[in-house]
Amino acid sequence: MPTVEVCPWGGLDTHSDHPTIDHFMTVRTRFAPSPTGYLHIGGVRTALFNWLLARQAGGQFILRIDDTDLKRNVEETLQPILDGFRWLGIDWDEGPDVGGPHAPYFQSQRLERYQNAARQLLESGHAYRDYSRPEEFAGEREAAEKEKRDFVYSRTWMAETDEQAARFESEGRTCVVRLKMPREGRCEFRDLVRGEITFDWALESDHVIQRADGTCLYHLANVVDDHDFKITHIVRAVEHLSNTPRQIFILQSLGYPLPQYAHIPFVAEPGSKNKLSKRKIDQYLNNRDFKRLYQAGADIAQRIGVNTDPSSFSPVLVDFYREIGFLPDAILNYLVLLGWSLDDKSEEFSRSQMIEHFSLDRVVKSEASFDSQKLVSTQSRYMNDLPLKRKSKMCLGFLQKSGLVSDPVECEHMEYINRVIMAAGDRICMAGDILQFDTFFIPDESIEFEEKAFQKRLVKPENAGALLAEVEKVLMTVPEFSAKALEDSLHGFCEVQGIGIGDIIHALRVAVTGKAAGFGMFDTLEILGRERCSNRIKLALAKLGERSSNTV
RNA sequence: GGCCCCUUCGUCUAGUGGUCUAGGACUCCGGCCUUUCACGCCGGCAACACGGGUUCGAGUCCCGUAGGGGUCACCA
Image (cartoon, rainbow, N blue to C red; front, top):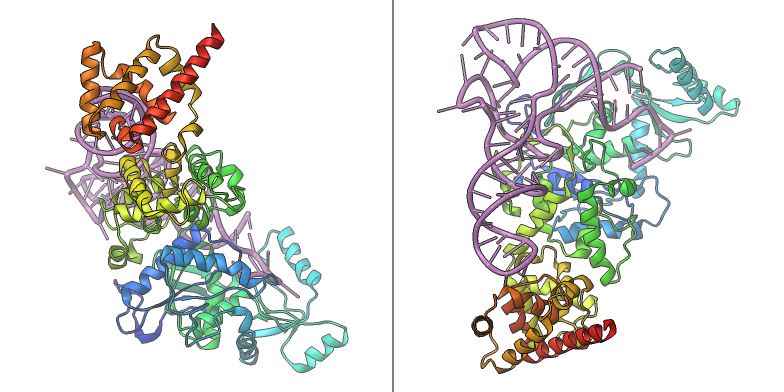
């Protein structure tokens, strides 16, 4: 078996120039997460590419659970992953919860299938019982390493007949099943992203596919399942590239057709080419942009009572974005451009546009670093395009979770919230940003004046207090308390006083909001309303009076 | 270390031998607008890893070198 011809179902010529889709067969792709308790952003990217391919071709996207080796509570650790996909709108046609014609979709429930395949491999001579003890096998490998030569197992403890097996067993040995890999020739296959790939068969070692206790290993399970589920395109991260020869060997030995392979680059760490990992958050936090995103998220999370421990709350995990009010479409748009592009200009892709335009032949080969800035920028664009109603609904959730607004919300209060959100405009990037404008939702007496701003705008300018007191009178007498009328009145006031509008507005802003920066001044006044503006100005003046009497 | 893969601005990318004096996006830096912040608008900085070929001509093809990454489990 020196060379492999890639030839999937339907007689598709994989060496043609149109490798993406075979119109004669249904495209079926899959994503096979391990139930780890969280959904990794890199995994989402891989799933997205698979999903896109299936949706584009009108095929199926399957979710299969790789739990062969896991003793932990699968249900509990799987749920966050399913929730994550649902939130993102990446739906699966077959898999957990939805079932399907090839059920079960949990590898832990398919052991028998793998054992049958192992038996078949044994019978056809493509695998053998190996009675070596672990230290014996390892010893051979270490010896090879020491002598700096390629390791080729001697197969000393290989049993191909029952007599041989009996002899080893009489020595008290137990056996595993190993692949009997070819020792000459090359394994050649075509990768939809990388082109022709070649490996020497002789360098592939005899991998174990079944343990002594009868349980089977990942590569066997993987290949058997992909075949059983009729997967046509294996789109996976490039770290699986070197696993492909042994999988092809299993496939071939079992007489199964080969799927199309596409090894996509993985998502790399910010500013490096290492694979993005959940465990290295502390290190990523040294990256300015990454830290900024994390901090923005943590600020929001703290106010709504979400744990901000970076081991479970981090920009590497999808949950992070859901917690702080990102839009799924924005995340998908960002991710689809991480390793894929349509042309030299297109940046915006709705779901349907992604489905329409995505193609594996435009996937790049090199790894793409995770860039939190660009993700935030994409999110910001999507948020600004969101209709007010949806934006308000998202923001309302955060106001309620932080206790700023009652749940359920009163109808007339909703109108007030809408006005705040409209005035905030693009200052709200993620929905949780609404909490930065909490000043509009607190009782007047709870207002806290930013110390620095208070000093600069109220304490330091000599006549600020007197001016502010005058302004308060003006506000009380304005016939209509609207942004437009307020603007006119205040401009008029400034003219009379012979000052610029800038001489009063900063003090006014600090007085009514407590903050140095915010939305348009007149919008702010209108939203707050006459009475609250007056209350707050009086509070500010009182505080100012306290100050001067203290310092005198 | 063996094998495999990758290498264009800080980042994501366009580019398939000839207006590429390398285009776009994000970031960054100026300026304008302005009552603050943000937006917006205008402008700017910034890249073909290196060395050999092939060719009239190379970011684009070939060969080396260097660098980076992945993988070499009775993990997935």
